Image (cartoon, rainbow, N blue to C red; front, side, top):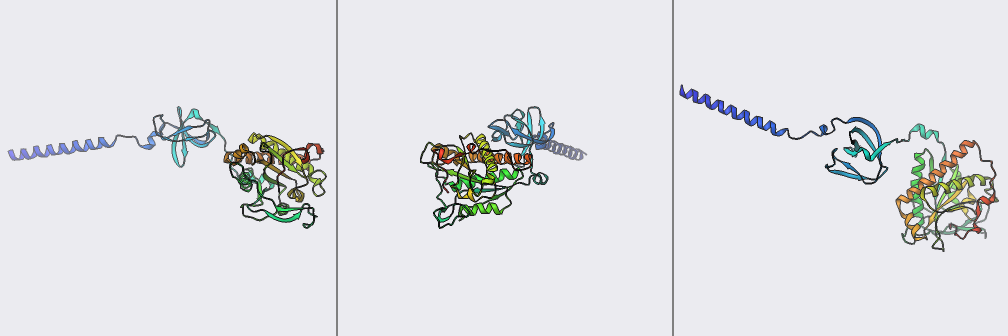
Length: 362
């Protein structure tokens, strides 16, 4: 009997120890919140916000002591998923993160849709001037000129090069052209580029003929000059003259285009405005059969301006300004419903002889 009592006592004691250990084990496993519990209490949102200042901190948890995921510049768009007190919940890189609500504001993001693209049927031809190799062979200055005559020019001149950056003109113009293409396509335009590489061999006349053969309504050329005067700086545009035998019927449209390109480019970049100049010494403009203008992006021969031109951020501003100028031109044309008939005097576009700045070499 005593043996049975002893066995019973041992069994009860062993059972108690098992229950105690098990209970302790369960208690130890419930020590932290599950990740989804961190976001509890957030009011659900499904829209977009943008940062309102530079160095905006993005946190892994909604508390200032939490690990900082990264810092963002002002104006960065973010997808908002929730709000709770002073914190905003976002999705970034497929990760749930948090930002202080005081550092963001609501914004609207317009995505390009098939409907929006269909509303804009305009086509633009962009020629990034120059190429990696010059071409000394001759071509006629005007379409009717014999390449063997005195009235001819080299098919492609040498590219300018940045005095401090070492950036070649053909690199700069193509870089800006690609950024411009992106800007315009986001606005719904169709864009045709004369080249997408530096190693092409396409003459100035051939580039204009490419634009003529396309369905483009305007031809825009991008250049970057070098001047003998190292102080020369700023942006200007070029068009063929009002008396040009090949293009005089398009003079007014070309002037409006050049003026709007120049105005918006200077607004976007803060560059010095040098004006709209007319010249009959460029093969590209003489061969154009559509309204055409050259926009001179700046002077690679000026050390400070060269440094600006070499920066991606500045090139983005150039592209934005040129795109805005093209947009303004077509808005004007669309509102008129026809070619502008308002008279534009030749004095509004200055002749190249009245300026000491050097025109871009073809």
